[in-house]
Length: 181
Image 1 (spheres, helix red, strand yellow):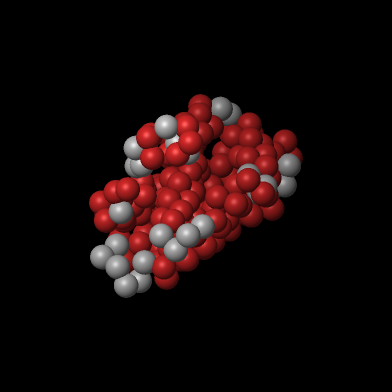
Image 2: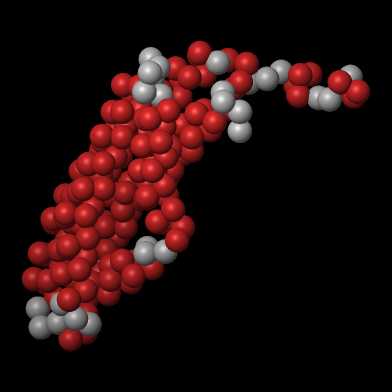
């Protein structure tokens, strides 16, 4: 990477990974949790526990923590540019996402796991009710925060493209080797 494309690439990667994470929270908000509410309580508990087990994988963690790391690196790279405030806003918002996830959603997931096997829970209705409402609320909070972080990073990338139009969209003729022209 050259000096000019390095910061552009990091900002682009931060924007993409943040968008991917926003999409995960959005999918839970508009599809996964409403679908689980249509199921019986034992099924909802079992499926949510399975989701919590399988989401802990390298692909999800690469996006979740990658967004944080890439946005932090981009904030440092852009610190003396007109884009700084947008990248910094994205970073602050995403740090809040990590905080909400760590302080609210993960402990709720752990409580659900500690309740035991779904078919052995004495009152699955009470267990699901104590999980679903708070978890969905905090998921919505992190979905809004991540989307706001994405918008901030998108604004920074727009400003960067405006400042370096040739780096973001080279004409086809320039992309061809000289001998081919």
